[in-house]
Image 1: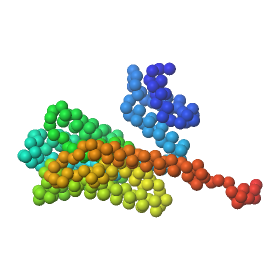
Image 2 (image 1 turned 90 degrees about the horizontal axis):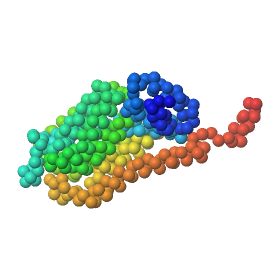
Image 3 (image 1 turned 90 degrees about the vertical axis):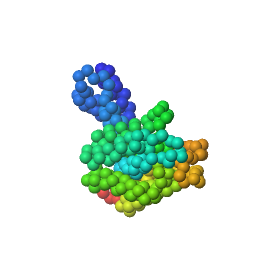
Image 4 (image 1 turned 120 degrees about the vertical axis):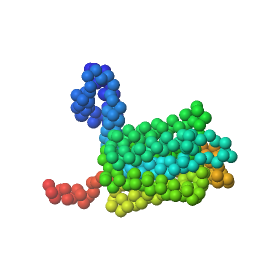
Length: 333
């Protein structure tokens, strides 16, 4: 057994034991046939495919296949939200900070965030032109740049977007990594068009001084509105699909609760500065509420999964024998 084969076999632990026994050799053999000469490690794409496949099989065994579809639906909504927010923040970077703040500018832009938001706009273009692996690669790059903004700012002393803006962007981006391989033509067209529309509205409001400079309006006006719109979209999906006895929307709603809470962080924490032109907040309270809302969404999702499995275990998701069924079975015999 080669080193590469052993490493592929270790990755198969993502699959249920029964599935590994019946299909494990076939799966590993296929990957080995496609491996390059001298290859010693599974490629990142193969690792991701095996982990996704194992998770899918485990969910199928637990009767939770609709959860996968719900997560994919949530990932599309998350990508739409992330690129739309990026367009608004890209416009915000064009406004210099007020001189009295004594914050240095980054060239002609407000902060290092200009690079981050440009990367997310590239994601919107990639989703329209080449959904699938290339779009996920663009999302990964944008995520890396978003996270790297914090240490780069600390090392260089250059300004960056506030953490309460970067946090929901990272969460939405992480969800967008779960995009399906194919997107409908309407979704592919809608993602860049929505970003352009949001950026245009932000530019119009900025020109008329309706938003203020830098990220001044984000805490009091825009972020709570964005949270409300995202929550409304998730609720409409859940209700619309539920009318057709489709649970995907409910799962998508549970998955999106974390970024919704992060977008509404200031509203929930009640720490919006009385001075509307200042992006400063009380960090301790804000951090506590950030941890709370970031954990609450996954906790509610886990409760939903447990409740669903309990329903199946109680026989509501499968047919239990009854006297009537037994009588019908006897007559057929």
